[in-house]
Image (cartoon, rainbow, N blue to C red; front, side):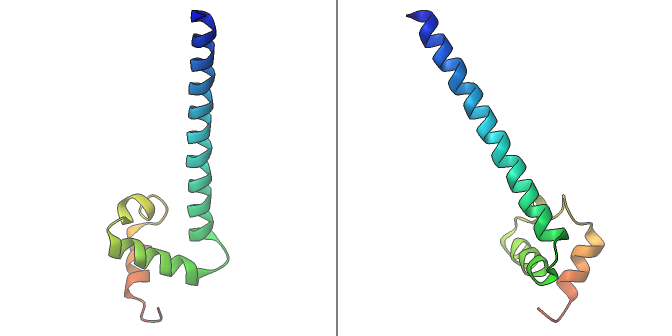
Length: 78
């Protein structure tokens, strides 16, 4: 019984780790597509919203440099 329970726990932890890894990779790919994708309108909107909400350190700065962020924020078209 102990070995069966140990095997189930190990399988669950492996499943959990792989699920979290896939979610993290999927999220990073989604953000990369937003920033480098075909539509600058969505990128600019997303950057403005992230800066307003205070999440720019996590969602924007790893993908864009500070000069690009400043140029998006200073643009008057959005």
